[in-house]
Amino acid sequence: MRLAAAALAAGVAAVLAPASPALAPAPARVQVSAKEFFFALSRRTVVAGPAIVELVNFGEDPHDLRLERMGGGRLWKTPLVYPGAYYDLDATLVPGRYRLWCSVGNHRQLGMQAVLTVVEKKLRGQTP
Image (cartoon, rainbow, N blue to C red):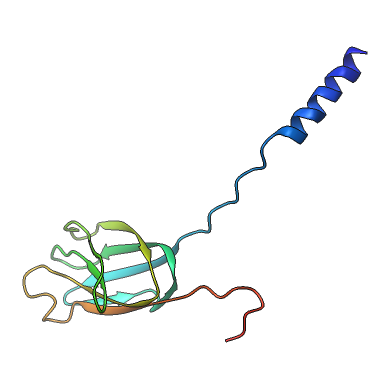
């Protein structure tokens, strides 16, 4: 009898337990390799939503990263990243084109800039 009651209680608890929350989608990732004096992106397009933009300094000088949507919007900034180090910038990106640049000295004018395109996520069954 006790065994049946325990089994019944476990079954009721399982039925009444809240459903596990839906897992959040993994963030989009893009790596920005910095070296004197250029940025190289691991990909030029990501899907809108949470993103990790990783600045990796393969150069000899410290660099940083500025990220801003063309046409205005929020400006994301990394701290100064020293040679051999990296920094992961967490951002939530909306569709559009984003300008990336190094704000150290005249690095931007010397070529440390790039463009990242953010596109809307396609729903299943959606045609282009």
